[in-house]
Amino acid sequence: PARMKFLKKDVSEANAVADVVDKISLSHPEVSIRFIREGKQALITPGDGKLMSAIYSVFGRTFAENGVRYFSWSNSGFQFSFYGTGATATLKSTQHTAGSATETAYVKIYVDGAFYKDVAVPETETAVTLASGLTNGQHTIKVVKRTSGYYSIVGLSKVQLDAGSEIRQTQKHYERNMLFIGDDLMTGYGSMVMKANVTGKTVPKYSTATEDSTITYTALTADYFGAENMTIALSGSKG
Image (cartoon, rainbow, N blue to C red; front, top):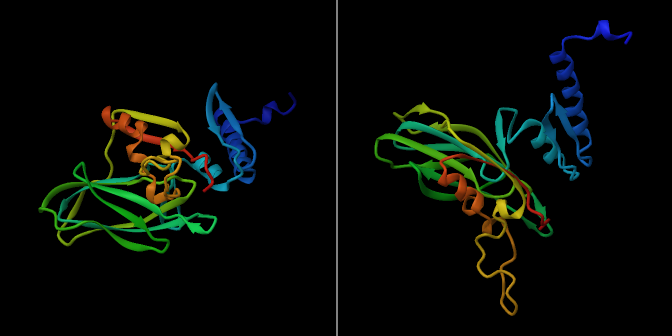
């Protein structure tokens, strides 16, 4: 071709194409786009019309903006180890309104591998106590978002340790990674509601308060194998 001599290296040209595909994906979230690079799938967007879905597909499970690290997918979150007695995190959430109800984002906090508490994340930046009054020593705190990405996004802007404490490790490195792609079954839609849809019984309407992705079969499978759980799933229900 006449323009061949103007082409750059294959890697540079491929990167340029990828950049264009990313921009098209973000500007047209209503279109499902699949990008194959060197025989491997480099990108696929759901085409569900939601800008945030396109953003997650392009940038990954988390993204940063104005000094805030956002995570949305079920079972996403952060983990760190420290020496001390406690820690707080500055969190906020972007919430989705379904009908007349505004759904709240929830995270579960684990200390040294054991469940510590469940927290509803407010929309405005708030200092949330992750753990306090621990025995002075080495501890690991893990924060996991248990609610669906369709209903809320959680943002982390700062982690503050108690006086005299110090960070030892920011993130655990897993030898195994397990990726789960799906829908309600993986987001834990209504997993905390007993005997749902039973004729003649009053059944609580779905809300994020009754959704827990950490008790789904996929989450339990990842825990069994000691693997990092990477869940890419949205509920099929719109509230």
